[in-house]
Every structure is written in structure tokens, then in C-alpha cells.
Length: 93
Image 1 (cartoon, rainbow, N blue to C red):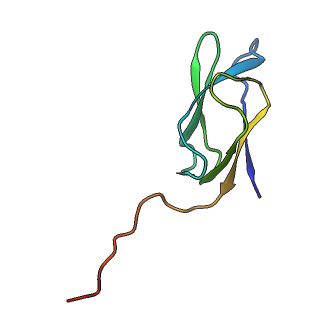
Image 2: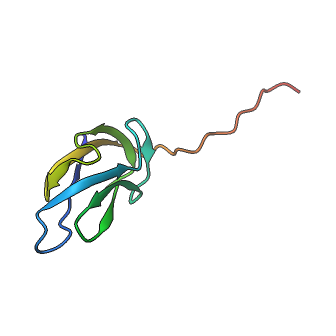
Image 3: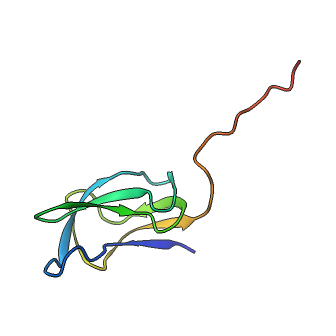
């Protein structure tokens, strides 16, 4: 089941943010709490962490677009796959 990437509350008086750089691409694996996108306010930039390990499946908002607090800006598919490649051996000797 897809996991939503939601704009968090970043301050009492802030109701809208601007999407900054996506730090991950669609199809790219991420670890839990790894930053996936930067959201910007007039006063600060905040990195939004992945709520779980998995793979980014869609980005609904792109750099420069506005989003309200609570808006879904992307989705990810949960899964514990590691991004590290496994060593291979030829089996010849």
C-alpha cells in the first residue's frame, strides 16, 4: 500500500510552502528518515524525511510549485530493500 509524502506543519502562521529540490528521483530507494525533498518557506528550508524505507513512486508537486500544509506531494512504496549493491563472484577458480 502506498505511503503518502505529506507537507508537515512548519510553523504556527505558515499555511503554504514552496517545493524545493527533490533529493531523490522516482524509482529510487530511500531509507527511513532519509531526506527526500526540500520544502521552503519565506524564512527557512526544511528537508522532509521519508516516513519509512521504500521506493519513491510518484512526485505530485515539482520544484517551484506551492503546496498547503497537509497536502500530499508524493507517494512511496514501502519496502526494506537496501540500495547497496551485492558483491558478485564468477564462481570460476
